[in-house]
Length: 340
Image 1 (cartoon, rainbow, N blue to C red):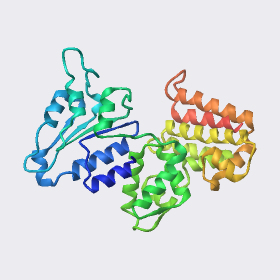
Image 2 (tube, rainbow, N blue to C red):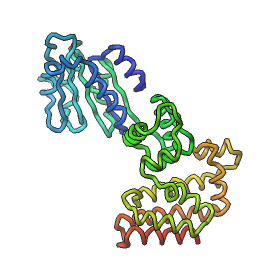
Image 3 (cartoon, rainbow, N blue to C red):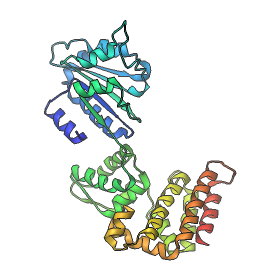
Image 4 (spheres, rainbow, N blue to C red):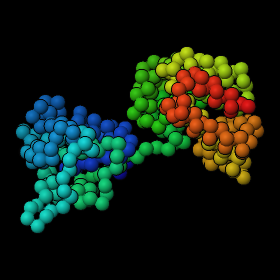
């Protein structure tokens, strides 16, 4: 089931006695668990029938004792185990003398309890009997990280669900600046929507005005300047980045440029250079293919490979490996080597 399917069932009050929400992307785990926490029970019932535990401070027997209680004057009780990846889960099997209490409960859960394990930033081991027991008696949802080329589409879907539209430049700039952290992207979009009338198209200007991205000095403009080998504009942008380090961290810059030149490298590899095929192979919108064509004309295959190597080298230097230069100097030195 997708997160949308699960939320639909929850809204229709179709509850499972067990939920294991696990995976490297926390956004959907939080989305589902927050819905259960705030909507499964009416507000008046939560004080007696809702228990929130944290894995780091909780033993499994505490969880099981809470799960085995019956609800008080209600149809259900909710037991939420947040940060379940921090909890000691114990043995995964019965031994000859003792029954594993966790497995015993998971194989025969109390129908009036909604027990939710939020296992974030990691995958639960699917080989374990506990996993298989939850899968059989309840519901397992794995929240996987999205590939970078899927983020613009996710942003478009998110804003549409909220009653907005977003143009290609806006979604791509957000994806470039915010990476693939869905919680961070959703947060920024929620704040942005407070200042944009519902139904209006979200544009690059909205993002620049509300998320603190400069119209003239941003990573998109830097990529465009490098693609054209515009030395003056490149240095102006780097000077701006140096003066505003919090808004333009060097680690993010190197990550974006590595992603950009990796796509230029793909351009050189691809034999079928029709816009549609290039867009597919590079994982970009066809609208942006012409930008990569220009960069490929100015940086041949060998130079592109050299640039990717330089980006890795300077990323290490920015972390203090064999260098103590300040970020501004590192950026200027790197730009000189890219452009010459």
